Image (cartoon, rainbow over all chains, first blue to last red; front, side, top):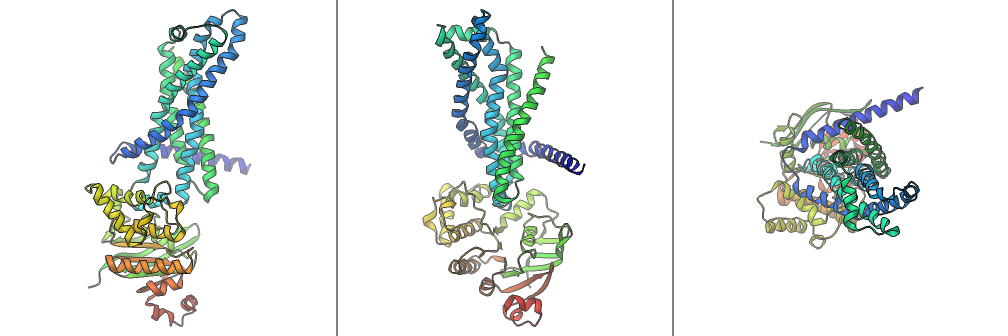
Length: 255
Length: 243
């Protein structure tokens, strides 16, 4: 029973260290000096440069979801409800979770690998000895940028996904753009939109802080860099699902 | 009167059961080039990382420019670090930045009042010191090992430090480039009157650069002296380095 015990101990240690790291973000992140220039640069790298991948995936998902949903809806004679159903599915769940998972794959791995590489080549130490706080410069800026950019990406992804759905509907019948979106929005309530939007901040924070934590504590040379990138994606993806589960339970309380 | 810029007293550092530094004492005099000589794994790098605050020692006192760095808060430690430059064995150049950005990085963070022209002049002056003005817009990956070392040296000089700590400055370089780096270290000391602590096991470097040599053996400062004094020592542990 030695191995499971050791594994459990290591898991608990890692969890504790991650929470301490996240706590340090709140302790240091909102005190001067503010790394505004680096934060803006990270917003560009994390947000703008993720847009093409997020947009493409969102468009395809909107298109495919509608095409696959249509036969069942036709069988029940409720194809007129497709915009409403797709709208709710995308805004409440598919848009946020899918964008967050793509974001974890692209940004989580990139932060983990970048910081991991900086760690093993002593660049983080070099920053520290030059009198710069590397935690603020590297971790706070990236985590904050990830937290702020993911909600924006999700809004864009939702819109693009719905546009994909609109095109899919028009492959089989004619429905105007205005009517499609009227049907979508008529069936959306604030309780669908607001919790879905709020949880994306937590998704973004999870991706940012886990990527930074894994990279910042990278060991074992180049092998460690690969491990950091990989575990950033795995851990942040699992966290996204856990946060989603909690968010759904909390949202249920208000319905 | 002798002025010490670094004073280390009774320094201890262990990793598990391995006592890397065991009641280690050493002082760096203003304006001198002091070499810390020891075999690989003897704790030389741990020593200078303790001095700059990258590793926390288990016990002892480290005074840098009159301040006990182990009792300083982060802000005061950062102020001291501006006056103490560190040349990493791996150079530690920021590989996502150009040479210019690497050199500008410490300047922009500590010299807010400088204009863009002044920053540019200081970058070019630092590059002239190491003879690499033409690399200003290149990425570190495009440079050779010796060039990277010289750029790293230029970066350490940019804030006009009072003390420079060199961690194995010639490791991994060919003999000709090693001599170039050693010559540069001497030139910098002469020009800026910096105090330098050089960690190495390269005897050519020791001979060319050292005004005093401290022997780090078994975690202690085993002996201190000039090259001539130590090279004629009959102590087996010391003579093993010079044979």
